[in-house]
Length: 344
Image (cartoon, rainbow, N blue to C red):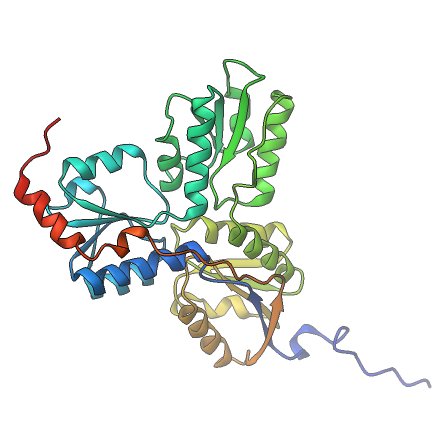
């Protein structure tokens, strides 16, 4: 009787394989988020509390709570900030009307808009000045979309996915350009672009991709994890567009299950049933301490073997907002208060 060969790791039953974590690289903070978070910390250090921030500086619960403990005050609108104070604009960018509200409110501003978002704003202004119809691919209600649309509201139409294309009408099909929210799924965006090109064959593309390098890199890494894992966990907040997209990309890439969590405590142990390989990554607004906590949680449950899955190198950095070089910003804010209401 011929002896059967011993099972190889690949052919062995899943329950007998060693448990492991496939850790994505790159993951977590992008250059724009890093810049924005440091900007709030520097402003607090340089000018003292409070520093008001319009909307969440980045879409991450842990980051916002940490900065609040240091003296940052987050508000929904600049009009909520008492006159004579400093207000910072978030990484997602704001419309020109918000800058005017701050001026009318006698506030000094620090603009922490991600430079890649600023690039899209400038493209919108340029194409509007050249009288193009601008089709902005993005999700309705997202702060970045609101800010970009505010640069040229008479020229911009929002396209929230391929399903919106049929209802889009333009003045001149030969003068149409598309721009996009920076945090979208690359595949989803190109599907929308293809549908727009079918309707408007002369559609012009922006000079360079609007989807940011970090969003693309994290989605590529997630696809790689999805091909090797039975479960993918993405650390990120529920209002983080790029984190949500990462979960969607993982599912589209064929992973059996993918979940978004803010903290390790949100992981359901039932997700691990029958799972030997867990893919782990984090959105572009997530500090790595939260990923390390998930790794500890998984290690306690037998997933101590961590394998780095590297798909790209990231070295881009951005200089801090120029307003942080102004040592007298708090004094200038006080002068605005003393000067009384702004005259038209």
